[in-house]
Image 1 (cartoon, rainbow, N blue to C red):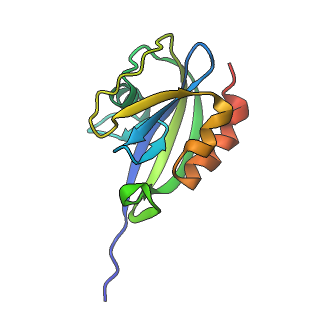
Image 2: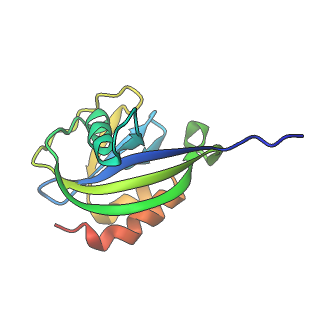
Image 3: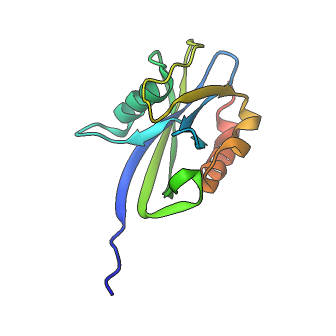
Length: 144
């Protein structure tokens, strides 16, 4: 029996802080929470993709780039927000941004909700264990 080949993809996104130091989180299909991010399209750089994805998932367009937060790998979130879908291994690249905008208005119907969350409350809300681990590892680097 042949094993299925894993799809390997690159996603880029951001930790976006508002003037009060809160972090933008997005709901994926209404059943999981993550930082805004998504796959690179065409010849986009990861930073360009991060800008586009943040806009699509939060409506935030006025972003100030501050820093590269690094990358990590994880499998995609499973159907219904449960477990992992091991058919796709994602490399996730993240950047730190600030914004003066306060209103979140997702443009992507697959991401129907976005909210501002104090940094200390973010990790427990993230659905994927690897997302939680990554966020905890950068927490001391994202304070305003």
